[in-house]
Amino acid sequence: MISRRGFLAGSVTLLAAPLAAEAQQAGKVYRIAWLAPAANPDNLDAFRNGLRALGYLEGTNIVMDTRYAERSAAQLFDVALELVRRDLDLIVTDGSSAASALKRTGSAIPVVFVSGDPVGMGLVPRLSRPGGTMTGFGLVSTELSVKRLQLVREAFPGRSRLGVFYEKRQLGHMIPPMEAAARSLSLQLKRLEVNGAADIDEAFAAAVRENVAVVMLLASALFQAERHRLVELAAKHRLPTIYENRAFSEAGGLMSYGPDLRDVFRRAATHVDKILKGAKPSELPVEQPTKFELVINLKTAKALGLTIPPSLLSRADQVIE
Image 1 (cartoon, one colour):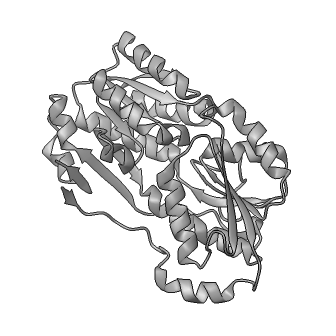
Image 2: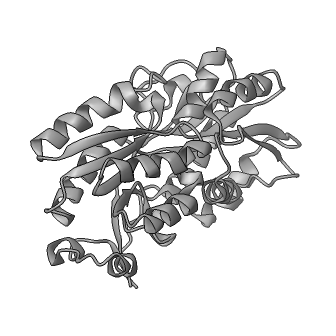
C-alpha cells in the first residue's frame, strides 16, 4: 500500500483537551442528537473522537441520542419532528437529506451539518454568514462530481456510457451541471435514481439493461452507509465504479475522489463546541475541505481486467495493491 494522505488544516489535537475541559461549564450536561438516513459508524466515531479531544465525555458532560430513518429518506422528516420536540441543546446531521428534514421543521434548535452543497440545497443562503440556526461543513458536491467525470474520461477513454446513481433531492441542482460537463467530455449520462436501500439492486439491474460501461455515485449519506453492498454489487456486475471518498476504495471499490470525511466529522465537533459555549450558528461560517484524495484500488482493477493509466496512478494519494 502506497500512501500520501493529506490532512485538512485546522485539525483538532488531543493537546487541546485539557484546556477545553477546563472551559466547560461546571456541572453542565449537554444534550445533543445525531440524525442520519442510515447508520455510518465511521463518521459517528470520528465525530465522537473530535468531541473527546475537546473535553466532552459521554455520560459525564454530554449525552448523545443517535437517530436514523431505517434507510428510508421518506421517514427522515418524521424522525426530525420527534427530535425537535425534545429538550436538546444541538443536533448534528450526517448528510444533506437529514439537514433538509430538520430545516423543514422550522425548529430553533442549533444544527451542525455535514452536507453536500448547503447553498444549492437551500440550507443556508451563503457560506460566510449562514444566518438562521444552521451551520457546519459543505462538501462542494457539484464541483467534485464534475471532477470525477474528468477522472472517468481519463481512466476509461474507450468507455462513454456512464450511469449516475443519485437521490431525487439531487436532481434539480446537481444533475444539470453534470450533464453539461458530460457532453463536453463526450460522455453519455444515464440517470439511475436511488431513494432508499431497497432501490440499489434495481439501479444496478437498470445499469446492465442500459449497457452502462461505468458507474458513478453522487455524494450521499445513504450511499456511504450502504458502501459495502454497493461495492459488492459493482463487482458482481463487473461495472467499474467511481465513488465519493476513500471509505469506498478501502471497502474494495475501484476508485474514489473526495475529501477525508473522517477528518471533516472530527472538525465538526469544533463547531459544536463553539455553539455550546455561546456562539450563534448564524454567525459561524460554513467551512469546506481544503484537501482532497484520489484513491485507486489496483487489486479491484486487476480483478475487473482493467489497466489504469500510469499518469493517473502517479497522481493518486493512495494506491491499494
